[in-house]
Amino acid sequence: MAKARYDVSVGESDWEPLDDSHRLSGPPPEVARALPTTAPLTLPTEYLGWESFEHLVAAVVREVEGAFEARVFGRRGQKQQGIDVVGFFNGEKARVYQAKDYKKYTAANLEKAVKEFTTGSRPFESEHLIVMTTADISDTEIDNKLHALRKANPQLTIELCGRHQLSDKLASHSRIVTRFFGSETARTFCRVLEQPSITTETVAIASDAMVRGPVEHLGLQEDLEAARRLRKDQPAQAA
Image (cartoon, rainbow, N blue to C red; front, top):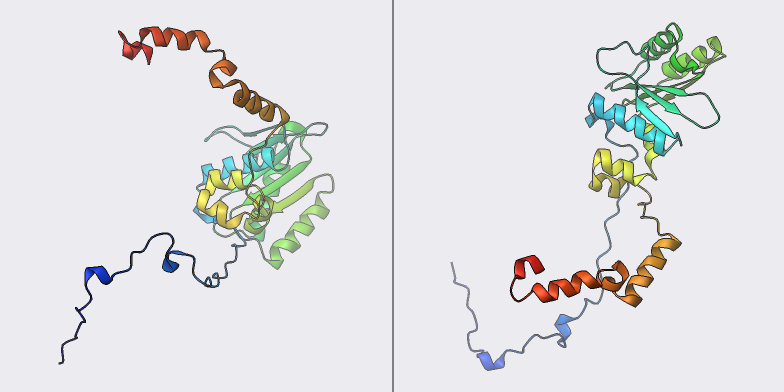
């Protein structure tokens, strides 16, 4: 096999230095087309444990649905009357929620959930039952059963929320998604990343600090002078 031959006749003086002004240091003439990316339609709720899912439901009740208070109902081992989370809203009765961490959810599961609530003591006199599950509920039998249960319990508002419905609720709530699924999932999944709110008061405080200086703005002139006096003999205390 013939060996590769290299031209070693170029000396160091023949090299052209590459600095910021060199043509090869500038941007390329064109940039490669970006890879098409599509945000996932659903969140990976199947990776949440039952306790995490209960707390996610409470966060949805409070931060998405607008309850002034939402709490996990009772503790493990207590009779919960078919309730996992309760939400309190201004001007209306409490809403109660069942949080079901299931890999598969069926029409029979839904019927059992409603029966468990309607035949119990119905705490908080609630007339609104929302069943939330980590599973996909895209099923004609489930839809038919939900319709039948609503007809059989006209005094009760029944809702069913599965993986797709829950994901739709959270699509614009990146802080909740970050808390339960991580920042990478939030960046990929959420349509809009929520920004910290900037109020008039915040702007005024920042402007005052810039104009007057941080020491004067915070009222630390005396502390700074004391530190200067101690700096030579007691540097640690001065710091």
